[in-house]
Length: 396
View 1 (tube, helix red, strand yellow):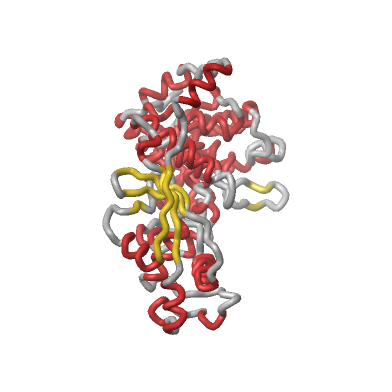
View 2 (cartoon, helix red, strand yellow; view 1 turned 90 degrees about the vertical axis):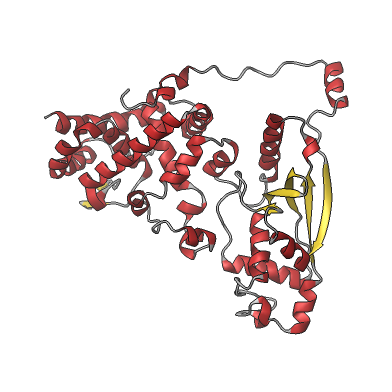
């Protein structure tokens, strides 16, 4: 296969994880006696003003460690939490990990902490309150004195997973991942890519988060131009965009890299993407540089060919272009990635390629290119058929 990073050439030859050993009851009892996988915790409770002041101390509590997801709460939901404190409704405890002495990483509760911090720093204007509608439009500093005194007496509790729960750095990482998964079995369910982002850290994951800032890519999927301030300030354009919140944008870039290896497709789409991320943890800086260039060259060439029609299927009934579709984007980007050396030729024939793209939808059954099936054959067929069409133009 063309355009592979060095480590990718052998990544599918890696051995699978061996099955866990079978233990006797005596061995299980001995394992329990040694306190293996036993977690050490402590509970803390702070009044809200003291908690906020502690948050302002640099390094005391890290709000966005590697496993945290993107912001999900809009201003109305943040306001509901503040209303709960006003009403003295019990709020679930936070879970944090002691990364160093008296320094913590948030494992569960980032949204609650951010809401409290935004409120006490006057960044949050209350809205959507039902029990206290009189307070809509207020910030902390403009609250009536009695309300302010009441909320200042409220407390937030947090459970600390202590460092002595693990004896080695590797055990520490595995333990955090294990606890993270278990904490997130309730509440808002994590998307597949949020879970991968949490558990399979490495150079590839960092690259994926970088590449989704690409303006061509963001335009395809209806994301606003990347802005660090918009992310930090919980822009409604982002918080209300499911592609962003669920990290579907990151998954789409992952699909591009993984499906260049469609001949190794296994375990369904979810399992295949996860397997690629697991094995990509061995990628070197050289691998990452090559993959970055490949993605950037591919999406630039794809835009030069299709313009605003990029990744949009052709509707043979309505004779019109549909909205961008992920499965079709897979085929287009993977196909184009194998012909970036023919960029000038392909751009010169872009009108013919657009017409040939329409013909693909007219020739093959509905759903071939739009992902109604995700078997290995389905995935391979749409990539092979698209690339064959493109190759005719590249080699003509």
